[in-house]
Amino acid sequence: MAVKQDLRTPIVSVMGHVDHGKTTLLDRIRGSTVAEGEAGAITQHIGATEVPIDTIVSKCGNPALRDKFMVPGLLFIDTPGHHAFTSLRSRGGALADLAIVIVDINEGFMPQTIESLQILKRFKTPFVVVANKIDRIHGWEPQKNAPFIVSYNKQSERVKTELDRKFYEVVGELYNAGFNSERHDRVSDFQRNIGIIPISAVTGEGIADVLMVLLGLAQRFLEGNLHYDASVPGVGTVLEVKEEKGLGATIDVILYDGNLKKGDMIVVGSLGKPLHTKVRALLKPRPLTEIKSEEKFQQVQSVTAAIGVKISAPNLDSALAGSPVRVVTPETVDAISEEILNELEEVQIDTDALGITIKADTIGSLEALVNELKKEKIPIRKATVGDISQRDVVEVAAIEDPFYNVIIGFNVKVLPDAKDKVQSTEIKLFLSDVIYRLIDDYKDWAKEQKE
Ligand code: GTP
Ligand code: MG
Image 1 (cartoon, helix red, strand yellow):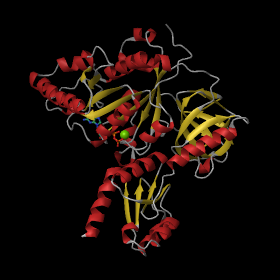
Image 2 (tube, rainbow, N blue to C red):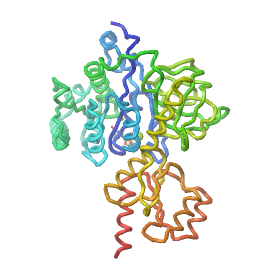
Image 3 (cartoon, protein in one colour):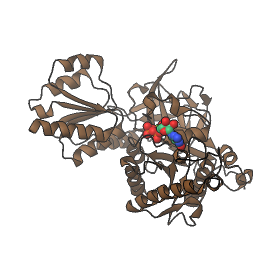
Image 4 (tube, rainbow, N blue to C red):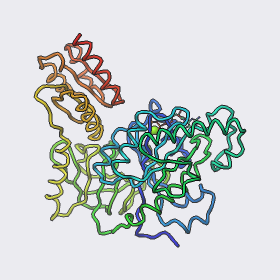
């Protein structure tokens, strides 16, 4: 059976706690070194990489599989810690078809591991758990790129016992989170049991197993949903707005449904009214490259979902990261603009008359931050996307209640003129790229103030 042309590429989100190895796992699959080049060794934005079926099959070490699987490949989405993922999911409906939750087997479950599971549960997304960093188990003898069981059988009894012990802790934590699980090679029904795959993203042990299980899940759970129709107008999500030499502002997009062509009219969410523009060029990253770091894009006439693609078009400066992109016609443009506007307004958070001011880098992170603050019953005066500007500072400085002379910034910069201004005021700034750290720091500070 050959690849069916009308099957779309499934989207696989890689999720999990900071530093548990999401980017390194993708590096191992692509044969790249993206993780090493990341500022602060942390993923700050969502990325996307297309891995063709031939690469997957050859990594699995069994060319005969080529005939068994019908998807054209997998589109992997790299998520930073957890943030923005929520919005990608809610914007895109079922953007992720499948997911990998990665957990450092030596560290066990951490807050973002649990958060990832909650998101997947909410969206009913099929997933596998990857128990990473087995090479860190004391006495481990690495077997480069070997399937897990081959490597496991070569370890000493002591090492095997230690791996099993840590492994069952992961099983226990998954049970506490509401999931029955078992080692992937012992799962007979992936609908009833979550498979856990022990791997090392550094030595490549177990990577073939991950790819095999994903293909199996894609085949089993998704086949019916993956048919795509070339006449469906493209629908996607903006990952990033980026200035490119010679092109001006461009947007990196994950197209998760339908079809997008050069010359198409598109509507994109923006800070004010959604913007309309015409696609001037479609730039496709090479397979196996991370769209975020790709430099040699290939110009194409059209693309079909799911794919990561850079769009060059006039007037993209005001496009908003995290917002929808949709292909429109003169007949649909008004209705679709309205839909996007409504969708974005839902995000334009209900605010309180008096409260703190928050800024975040994308719609997704803003939503996540607002939700967390609401849980803590912390009032919010204003919540917007973007860096902290002089205007923000002036507004906040004018508030009389010192409890609310506060700006919380998630993954944003303080613009230079705002920095100068802050120094001449009593404003308290909380800046971080970890949501719960911002909340904790603010709560600690507020408690101190009350005392
Ligand atoms: P964020 O994107 O910031 O959430 O982190 P991440 O989950 O993408 O983690 P990343 O891949 O950046 O890895 C974090 C660190 O763990 C890096 O120093 C990696 O080299 C290391 N690491 C990842 N996987 C393994 C592994 O299997 N074994 C060992 N020994 N180290 C690993
Ligand atoms: Mg990462």
